[in-house]
Amino acid sequence: DQPGIYNAAGPATPASWDQVLLELARQSSTPVQIRWATPEVMRRTGIRLPLVGSELFKGRDSLHFSSTAAQAAGLHYRPLADTAAATLAWWRSQPDERRAKAEGWPAPELEQEALRLLASH
Image 1: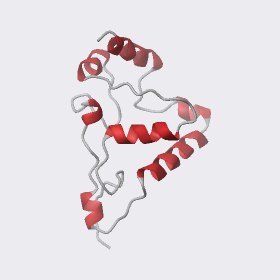
Image 2 (image 1 turned 45 degrees about the horizontal axis):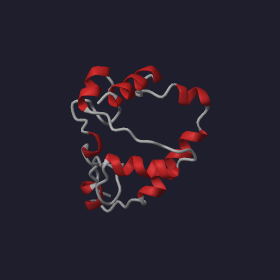
Image 3 (image 1 turned 90 degrees about the vertical axis):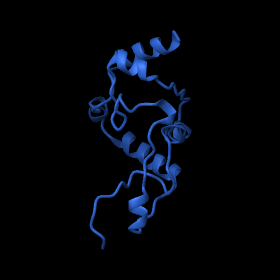
Image 4 (image 1 turned 30 degrees about the horizontal axis):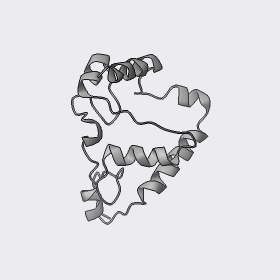
């Protein structure tokens, strides 16, 4: 046993947001179009996403998850596709009320405003 705090949210090699979202999109039963918000759109709309603070957000080039310390302690990770499938299965198993109250996600109106701003560029 090696006590400590480890980032267990990453694959064996660093994964960008682009890789994570593309894998989730592959797992979707409906077509997905990913639109990368610019820092300007994030500021103008006031959208702040979990794990991606607006001051850090750089779209597909956002910070990577690092699992270096966890790997050094002997922890192992499943492939990203397995994690994506398990995450989507968990989310889909949640009651409608729970999914409707997901914290940290922008209201649909705010998301639409961000998409409108992105389309105007």
